[in-house]
Image 1 (cartoon, rainbow, N blue to C red):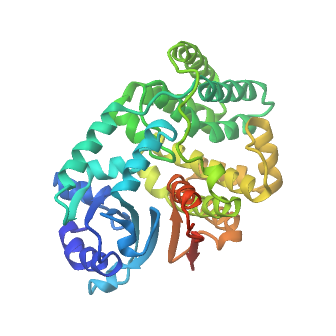
Image 2 (image 1 turned 120 degrees about the vertical axis):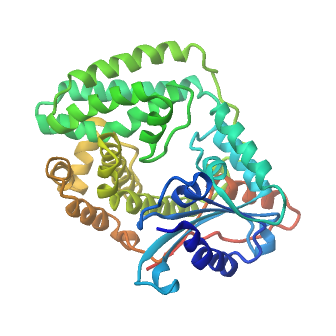
Image 3 (image 1 turned 45 degrees about the horizontal axis):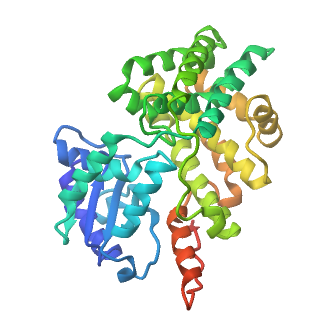
Length: 411
């Protein structure tokens, strides 16, 4: 697809309509890389990823940073055959960006926004700050996240240990394979943390391994390919042992405690708002992952298995959230999923063994029926850590502003 024609013919008019007062706009993802590097042609199915920055969000009638995911018929608007595309806009101002960077650095090592700003192409800059923000983003990414606390790292080590034991104790090949599906993406996050690097948060870890840690990525892929495809756990057990040995050394250099979040989400965001935001996030992620099997398979074994693992884990998280359950892992996770989604295991194996993805996509849609299924025209969600900041400041104000920030979707 011609990136410049898409930008001039659709994206700039779209931004002028939806974000008329924006002071700075970065186009990231496939299209941003195409414009910046000149050596990559986005696929027709690629999303358009935006970071939209205001000097002050209140200038556009908002008080907190948010994410707007909108399906648009880009083809018709450009005088072509109808073709829908996701427009993914992350909306901030300078204050929320600073707060977000601090949160990412210290508490949630998923650096999506810095990556988009660093890699992105500047479409609009009424501030003169675009190049500066890109330099800052690059430096921020190169520094890596702050290390986890010993307690949080012990939880990650416990995850690796629990799945090693569960796979070893599994009495059937099917159990071993499905435990591998449940574990893979989290093992990848563990390895990235061991290497003092940003986590992926979804199905993008393979990119980090390819760019930064190729040998580590090969070992991870080979171990989980053997486990998930054939139930052969020898490489997996060796990998888990290696991760645990390295993890014990890593723990010795970690701080005992992390600095507290300046605005705790649980303390400052009402429970119903947190639940609504969780539902919207799971809806977006399960849709995004559950419709990407063909695309991920074309990118290689690591990408495909990671996407399958991430999709399965988001299905698990969605059922846990809907039922009010504590997170389940290992055999307990398998038992929970067998109650809520008895077809998940055989359908996941069908995707692995036969390359048939439609049943898995249909299962994701069925799972998400409480929030309208996978399909939507528009989905609005908020950054929970920034919402906590706004609610906390309202609580300190002499005249608090009472306003509900309602995550929502349109079918």
